[in-house]
Image 1 (cartoon, rainbow, N blue to C red):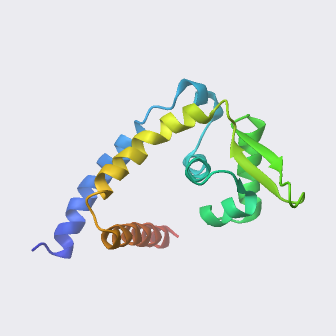
Image 2 (cartoon, rainbow, N blue to C red):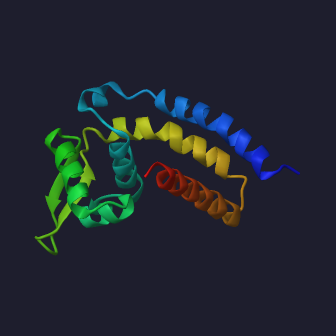
Length: 148
């Protein structure tokens, strides 16, 4: 049985390789000129997997203030990557979606990572997957706390 330090060692060796591979995911030509940052990838992943969302729903999922989400949406909608439409039920709300002409490129870009996660997580039970995701969240929070 491995110790916590044995596992830490393995993860410290593995993490840079994972990050390096993720950075090598080729951005489709149609999206290259948009200066996309990691925060944009997360936003687009939510829209791709969950469908159109309001700015407030995006803010909650991204764990940022609504004004921050609104700025991100504005930035990408001005570039034509996202579309903003008025909510038919409540005109004060804005519905955000991936622009149809960019949807195939976004799907292509994000599918490699999604497929790799599906392959890695498929053999696990639902409880094991929940534990893994909770562990990743705890790690991310601990790193944030260390660097704050």
